[in-house]
Image (cartoon, rainbow, N blue to C red; front, side, top):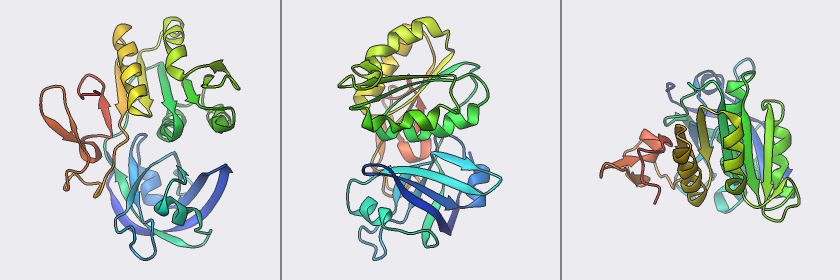
Length: 257
């Protein structure tokens, strides 16, 4: 989709926006100009190459005017702990934009996401705006649904579900999805999140005969399709590399298990 670049970029912002969740703003006019929703970057996550390899992070938004690239990440291990300690003015190595993103051909898409899988959907909502777009988002508690405020400027409606019922409907986003689909006259569904959620969303889309695109979350080593670490099965019996052929696929093309 876009021409990928390898460069060292300046950190403009790196701050906690929720417990254990950070918003990272990088200055990269080249990536900001060419990135498409659903694509990702490979980021340096250690000053001492431990861990050795860069790690993939979804692009959560861009600003072509300022050259800013936004990433939202959760601190879960050594790499993200290192990343959370980086300060504005410091630099990071980056490769991107990488992968195949969402096709935005529909006139009324529905976005469905859970957890950190909401990050690429935020970029998608930004790209679609001001056309009407609705979001179905799920999380465990009200605290996890800080995403609501990030999406509201770009969405005509935001539907929330939490496991404990502390915000929105009680349950998962999959629980409320059929009723929303029935009344929304959507012509596409774009989704990212845990695999069980993707399976359920794809099944609901198939039931209502709505084209569905899924963004797969997969461990990656190179980001270029060379190492085969992120291989996934396709429904025709073959294989595909998530980093090269995805991470976004048509739901009917890949085996979601």
